[in-house]
Length: 143
Image (tube, rainbow, N blue to C red):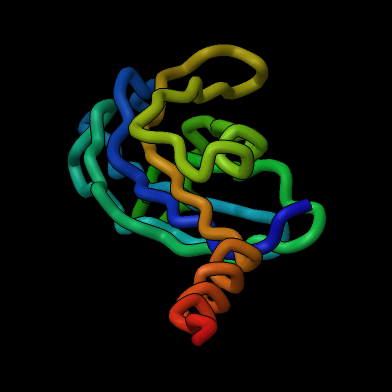
């Protein structure tokens, strides 16, 4: 299992089910990779089609296989409503180094309830170490 850092850019969501009946919801995302949890800003009043364009960095260690993004509606005075969640497998980004902008289904109670767009970049600790060695020792020439 690779280790390194995972850069996640949370771009936007669309077609989300509005959990507020009288006004537009105020969605935000909670991104979880194993025990690490990051929270986006609240897209106040953006309703079913919020845009964030926010970056998050996670440390990837043994056993990290998926990123879970839970979408919630911020409600003042009451508990925030769960809009849905997306589970993103990390194997493609570990193998390819990056996944450009891609759309993932958001589900709630096993039913489709919108989609979320993000991009992923993985930086392996091994590749950083190799690059540093080449840079340090690569200029030596035998005379």
